[in-house]
Length: 179
Image 1 (cartoon, helix red, strand yellow):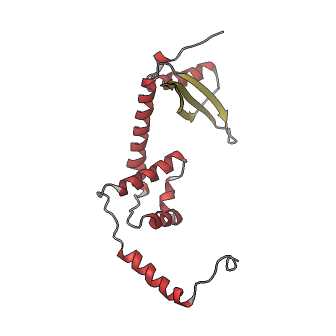
Image 2: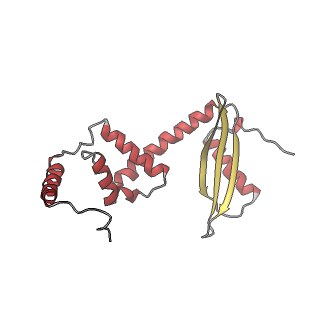
Image 3: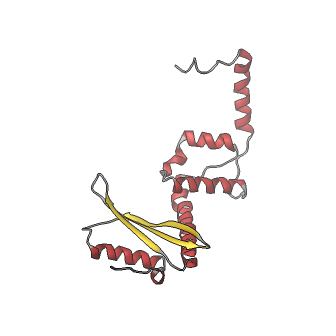
C-alpha cells in the first residue's frame, strides 16, 4: 500500500543502511542520570508534556515515543514509569503549585469561577479557576478540578470552596457581591 508513496532505496543504499544503523546505535553512549544539562532539560520537557497534555505515564514505555526521542537525542536515557510517578510528577506538581501560590500572593484581588458538571458515566466534577490582574495583565489559573461527591447543594459547594480558598491562602483577596 505504501510502496507507491515512497521510493525504494537503491541496492547501494540498502547495503549502506544496515551498517549505518548499526554503527549509530552501538557507538552512541547514553548519558548517566547524574549528567546534568541536556538530560535534565529533556526529562523536564517530557514531564511537562505528560502533565500539560494529560498524557498517561505509560507514554514513556511507548516504542514510538522512545524512537522520537532517540532520533532527536540518541544519548538521552528515558526515566522509568515508576520514577516518573514516584518522583518527577510529584516534584512537577509541587513546583507548579508553588508558582500558582506566588502569583496569587502578588494579586491584590482574586475572582473565582466555579463550574460543576457530570460526565457520561454520571460522575460529578468541580472546577475552580482564579482570575486576577498583576501589572495590568489579566491572568487565569486552574486551582482545582476534582470529583464532587453527593448532591450539588449550596452547603456542599461551600465546603469545597472554603477548602480551596484555604489551600491557596486567598480568603482575604476575594470580594463577595450579593444582590
